[in-house]
Image 1 (spheres, rainbow, N blue to C red):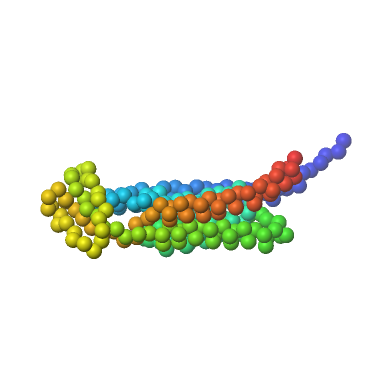
Image 2 (spheres, rainbow, N blue to C red):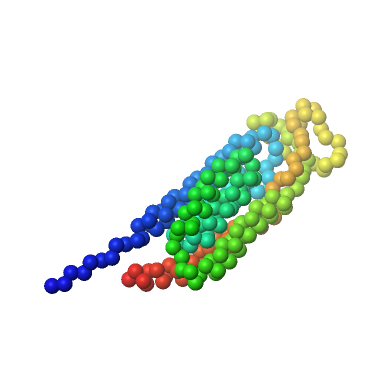
Length: 225
């Protein structure tokens, strides 16, 4: 009778790092929702709606960072996890409301270095992570640069205002005159064109990260079998 002693598994620390990276990615997703709620609360002042809701478009950038972290962790791809962490750093400088993304960014960079990877794939993985990073940054640039300024008036009741976009540079109605109770000029309003550009670039980043890791998943399952 022979007894086979299985070698001690070294995968437990790796699994813990993977699970923690996934949870940090989920935390980034939760923070992106919190950013959307904050933007929604701050935008209650009288103003016509933008072409793309800011409370959705801005959090979409951060949600993509969280999804990249989750994808990279589940596929055991440290370069993707580190890229998500670096993007959190970049996103943290957008405003005071996004400074909290620095902490998950630090954690993701630290965890990414401990997730297994084949040495022969490092160059390819680094290239994929770099392209995904550029796509996410480009999405933010497109969203925040393809903006427009507009002048407007608000009539009717403050509880249910009717907004009218008017030519800038002309006479502006005095609030309280007639049925108009507010007027103003908004610079940097988000546009549909910017929102579509952002969506395409973010989807491309997620698609690149997901599709380039499918072969890794199949090989891992085959090896486990």
